[in-house]
Length: 317
Length: 317
Image (tube, rainbow over all chains, first blue to last red; front, top):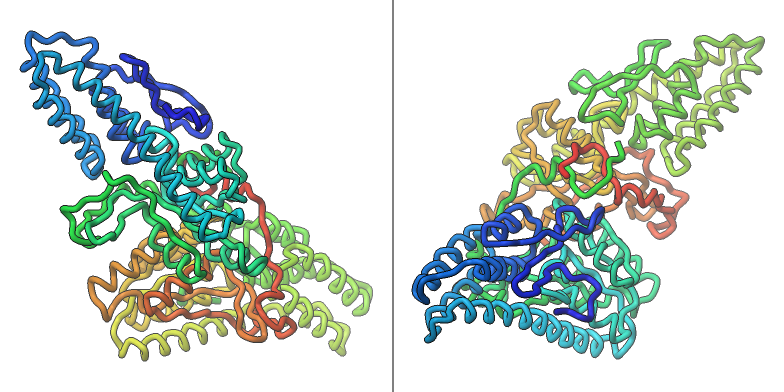
């Protein structure tokens, strides 16, 4: 789907779905076959796949794979089955707005399907989602690259990013990492800094891996080192510190307030203090007009174990 | 030496020196006997002991232990031996200003010793350093507690600290953690937040451990979560967010610029943004009047392995 990037985390060859098992990255690149919605549900809850757009696509495609090996007595029976399974898939990640959005759209597709061929209509709609997500990301990349390029007067810039928003988090190309991919292709990128992204280390485990696969010059930094880095680069050359901080979004409220991985707010303060641009890269599906401002976005609180135990590292003790 | 704190990382019972092996914390509390300056040198380079004041004390006392089992033909021979061994101990941590300061002072003691009893003069001077460091820290604790207590109008406050500046980093009580200990004793402390302090996790491994040993109510947070925490506490109660951020110092320049663990600068920016007090707690021995401002302080760059491998954690992968 995403011919520009070397990394393909979601592979769909009708009717076969395979996904890259992100739990084993960066040590092992292993693809897992997803046969049905139970497999899809498990892939999401176990975090074999993560990233809001990727979760929506994998959930939708897991049911597409299931439908290919299921026969129904009638269009209505297929429709009911699809509704039931979509509701089940929604329970895999209760905070994922993109998943809820995809489920609502897919339900509408099967409900409005006039023919008996409900399954085909469903599969075609999920395939379109896969294609559209990559196209959206390429557009985000293009807009972002043009915007940052204009701000730098066409000079190459350094970018900094947080968490993982790349081919591993989306159907391909990525959102914030999509801007980085596009700027690299446009020869507007000098160097990328990616943060570890404690506690779950998505930056250290996933973004650093993606950047290495793409051979984009990059350095992994501790979350706490960003301000010192910004200052050091500014001292070296006042016109060419960090050109922009680019991040993704879990959810954007109606007023523009953005919820994203812990640490994003601290990066925004550091960027403001050093006069760096701060850019949130997200598709329109991440905007939740039901939520007036950021205070109404419910923040997912995960297990304290993520801070008391480490994953994705080799032991050094 | 430090009767107020439960934790004693440096134990000196003339002529026996034992230190807590900090490499095994928080999993195991094991004391190591330091017999001579070679043992002291090894304890510092291997990071069994760390923290600028503790390094100086352990280096000085390791030679004191050695002298008890060494005989010299003359005062002059003892003097020369002490000079040579102090020079050797200086190589254990080339950036530790407190160690250099202690070495200079101890050389002066043996040089100005009029009698033949040079060894006794040396040992007495090191013992005084041990006592004085704890007294200095208690004074820092008292000043800090009074200052913060005045700012809060006598109300209990929440404090946040970075890295480890406690009984494990000093001869006892601690500098920034000394303020926390004193405020707890003064019943002016509500809750302490300590940062992980990536990449070497001194906060997660050592400060969280010290706070638990002392039974001070505390929470370990990711370095990147501090700004979100400050904002959340302020939203809950505008008058009682984080009362102050208290940190130690590796070195303070003549103009007050302070070099400290990576992440300190980012915390200072976060504190400024949220209107929190930011306090550097350090003895006068951390001030280097030879250095005009912060740009002239050479920053130690450690191995990239500290960010690609983890220590002090149980594995979660």
